[in-house]
Length: 296
Image (cartoon, rainbow, N blue to C red):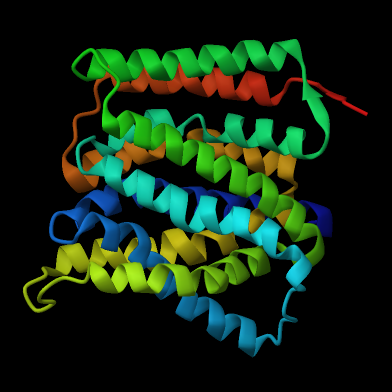
């Protein structure tokens, strides 16, 4: 007979993997949406759809409204996860391939770990810095050799997206101790609405009737799945299976994105892309396993 602990660990693995799969399709779906939608509309419009879903859930479950003293903390999540990462990654996808973006976004777990320990008042070890620098160097090298020999605007946008997301994830983890993980995502979306809606309205398509079903599917995917449902699966997995164990599943996201890009967009799976993705994965895994020291 299966013990409750074993069942929770198994279900945590299932939910965690589901979350990673959902997130891994974000960049390919973004490129599909960009074929017919404005980049700002794609980058920020997803938050408008996700806000509607969040309000329904928050009201139906009667979640208490957060105190205003938490507003600065939520502002970090809004700027990073709701505005920064979606908009910057979308701008990058205008010019870069989704598989190219997957390699650079592969630094996200390491960057999140860094901001997490700094937020907790800890000092990264020398080992962590070694692998962080090595991973960053690999990403920069990949950007140079796979482009024109220079760091492009798309590369800078992707690096900015990594910075924004990792900072907001670290802050969101702190807020989750008070409000719960999915509640943080929902409240951040609701708080972002007055900021995001006017911008989205200025970038509406001139005609919705001429938009193809593929572009709509891409936009609806990043709105409903990447921006909303994916977080529920991911956080449920972390809760059931443990952060240390389930968090490692995120290491496979670049490879799943490369695979999704090949299937959905016909992008080539080159040895260079797979090789650099593998090398970055090793640096991230070793860096995350490094020990940290308290700064207090």
